[in-house]
Length: 126
Image 1: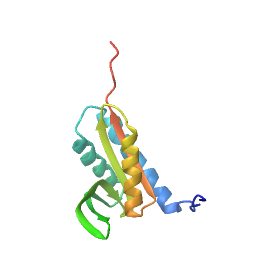
Image 2: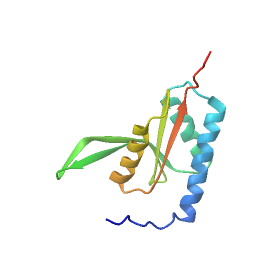
Image 3: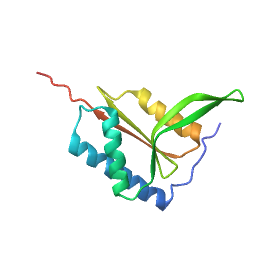
C-alpha cells in the first residue's frame, strides 16, 4: 500500500499555525508549569483572541461507529478557525498516548492541522 501524498498547507494555515504557536509560548512563558489544564486553556484562548483568531473550547465531536452516531465521542480542547485541532496537557511527563489521541482526533474530524501543547512539571533531582 502506497502512502497518501498530501499537498502543503496553505499560506493562511501557515499564518494561523504561527499565531497558535506564539499564543502557546506566551502562556507558557508567563505561567510556567504546575497549573490546571483549564487555566492554560483559558489563557491560551485569550491569547488567540488577542491575535484575531476565532476558536471554540471543549468541542464535542460525536463518534460514528458501525453506522451509529454515539454522543460519547470525544472533546477537542480548542478548535481554532474551525479546522485546527489544539490539544492541551498539563501533566507530569509527555506520553505517546497524547500524540496518538491528537492524531486520532485529526483523523476522525478530517482536519489536517493539529497541535499538542504540553506543560510538563520539571522533576527536581535533589
